[in-house]
Structure formats: structure tokens, C-alpha cells
Length: 296
Image (spheres, rainbow, N blue to C red):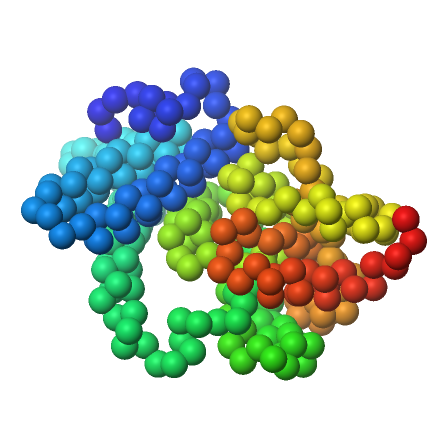
């Protein structure tokens, strides 16, 4: 990749991995907005702008991979021929797999946007109109999403379409595959229809707070001492606002979440740009229902 990766991403040279991740998601979200704008254009410059946008996204993707420690050295033919089969497999895993995954994600992203626009009116009734979207993200193991969906239907019979997405995410990336999955996770969060409520472990919640994903919930935290004790208060790194705010609540003990496989601490937050804010508030209130006495 040509150019300084820090300059490509608009970061200082001493940027932490958390800052790199946060900046990457911001740039991906900007790319999403630009892509949608270009799809709406009718003039002859759309194809040219699309090529420029694709090239810029490729540069950002390569800069991100370089700063996050993706393998950057391609083995030459002679060296590769002298390796054992196990070493060859290692090289393929470390170099080619990540580049293939990155390329597939870029192609898949473009295809997803075009397909979404072309087929939006042909989807069956209710497919694209959920009452609420809930995302589960963290190192939780196997999560029984159907059991959670049944519990939510029982609590909210007025909802007819509850969409639940679950994504396993390690607290610490242990290998190149984990790094690639983190990148996929960022892309999914940035480009797919935004979820309304997130259920996360501490690591994922802290990461996405710094990406300015969550709505401030200071007012809800002020309702009672118990809610104040449950509040997750953070200051967003790199934000102009230096004040710490409540962005989520510990909901590990909520009856709605028992027996579905969420091992460990669970934090609930409401996405700032979710499409169903009223339903998100209702769900969070129900998750916290046992902790909302009127005593100050």
C-alpha cells in the first residue's frame, strides 16, 4: 500500500489499537453514506465517483489491516517452494486468507447495497419491517436466540417481528482469523440495518462506546439509586464532549436473559441511530424492570 497508513486513516502516529478501530468504523460509516448517495445519483458522473469511492475504501481497508498487524509480506516463489507443507499452509493462512477475506468483504458490501436497493419492494410482507432488532455481541458462547425471541414475544405480544442477531466476538484477538472476524463485525455494524438494542460483554461495549454508537441514558440512570448502580458510565475517547455519560446498564440478572447462554456480565445499550427508538426504550425498561423503584 502506498502512503502512510496513519495519514490515510487520519490518525496520529501514536494512535492506540482502540483509536484505530474507532476511526475505521467512522470511515466505514462515511463510505456507506457516500455509497448510498451515489446510488441515488442519475447523472453521468456516478460511475466515476463509484470508482474513486471504491479505491478510497480499498486504501482505508489496507491501512487498517497494516496498522492492526495483518501480514504484509508476500512469500516469493523460491522461498515458498522450499517450505514444508505445514509452513506453506501457515503462509496461505497468514497472507492469502486475510487478503481474500478482505476482498470478499469489499465485493460483498457493494453487492449487498445494490441488491438491497434492487429488491427492497419485492421482499415478503414484514421481512424488512421488524418491530425491533436486537444484537448480541461478545464472548458468550452458544446463545439460544430462539428462546430469547419467545420470551420477548411473551412480554411484548404487540410485536409480530422480532429480529435477533448474535455474533461471537473474542475479548482479545488470538490470531489472524480473530482479527478478520473483528473487521467483519465492524462492517456488519456499520453497513447493515442498525440494531436498536445491543447486549454486549464489557470488552465489546467499551469498544463500541468509543465509536459513538450508543445513545446517552443519563436521564434513565437518575431515576433511582439502583439504576445509578447499574449504569455504565464512559467518556468517549476522541470526542469533543469530555463529560462522562451513561451509555448502558448492567442487565445480567434480568429474568428475560436467564437460561439463554449469556455467560458473564451483560451490558445493554440503545443504538443512537436505531430505527425503532420507542421499542428500544420499552425493551430496556423491561430488562431493568426489577430495578426501578421510585425511591431516590
